[in-house]
Length: 394
Ligand code: MLT
Picture 1: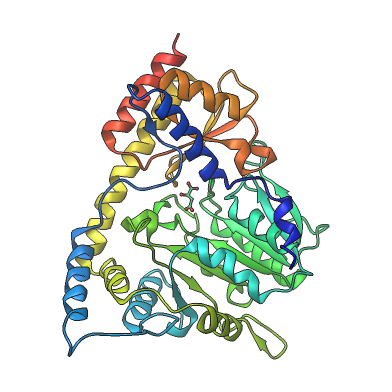
Picture 2: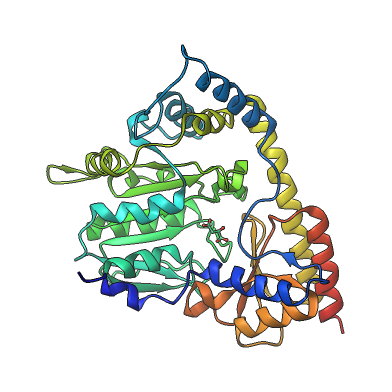
């Protein structure tokens, strides 16, 4: 027996597990300190009432012989796929219900999708970015190229015709920088991908935070994306499903190479390796798209937006450079007085008892940068702002 040798090339632990470990060690050693957690992008507001009612009704159905359900369709129930289709239609994007696959979250699908692509492909990944893209490709042993996202390009790298890639990752609004592509910029990526015969894996987990004029919420707002892109979405950050688990992936029928349909391969993969998201969870997810659900999700998002504003106002007062916070729940700041993100992490934890995520954990270009999330409670965010101001106004 041999293990997958590629695992040796990974960092010892996944970024957010490493941060959680450090924080637990700190709190165990300092039980008297009130640590404010603004590291991992985990939501704090409960599921919207419309979601809870829909789940309760589904639980009752599952407890009655006449309405009980066993295995569901691996790719998701029609009622949820239709609700998601309607959500796209309202934004002017036309999809077929069977182009939408329900999953237990964007993270799983972003990793699992690689099953249908050869390990011989070269992948192009922005740096910095959500570490799952790099780690899952390292595990498989694919060749990785990086697209540098820096302060100079507004953390929005654009395609370079001199670079040849087969699989291109785009995350917009970006995790961790909060930078969001405009439709026109995404169109350039789509044109590039089509020229190269590449596929774009588009992570739209934070699309509901986008409000800026001309900014994209879906890759399918561009022309020709249906021939070259797969979109990953999540209920986690919008409807509080981080613990409940539900997401969806759009794999267009037009995405083909010769007689091979990407949608068919993904369906084959999912029906073989996945047994679907629980009925109760899917009923809850469908409630997000009802009028009541939409209103309640917007109320929750407005709390997180206010928190982001509190954080960016704080950076403005202190004169700390940052991006994000406007179209994103993440504020990405230049570590004041520190060149090393991890040292800044330790300093902020020890001196202000505030946890963030070191930018270097998202890639080499994140060195010297730091991410704070707006997903904490309003009280915790206000307290964090107070402590940060006190620490850096000295
Ligand atoms: C993050 O903090 O970047 C996210 O919460 C991680 C995730 O969604 O898996």
